[in-house]
Amino acid sequence: MTPSKRENDKKIVVYGAKNCIPCERALSFLDEMGIKYEYINIDESEEAKATVEILEGGDLLLPLIINPITDQIAIGCPVDKEKFQQEIRRILSN
Image (cartoon, rainbow, N blue to C red; front, side):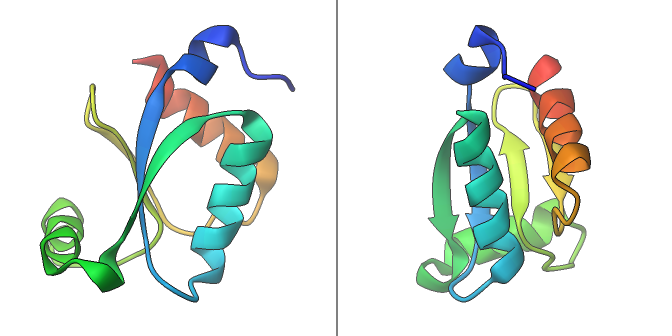
């Protein structure tokens, strides 16, 4: 399914880490969808790591994907591309 123009114009934030296969897969799926994103590597920023832990209630599950305008989040490994795309559309729709 092709993303709408509106989805393409939005930018989300993706928190990830070096050598994180689920993070790499999420970025690949986002690229395929044409979704703009800012990638933050938590290995390079203690502040970013602390932010993820706060948003996840003490957990550190990656990737953490956020719509910074609505604070809608998606957490974890996008194994199924179609379900991942639905989740991204959900956080972008609000």
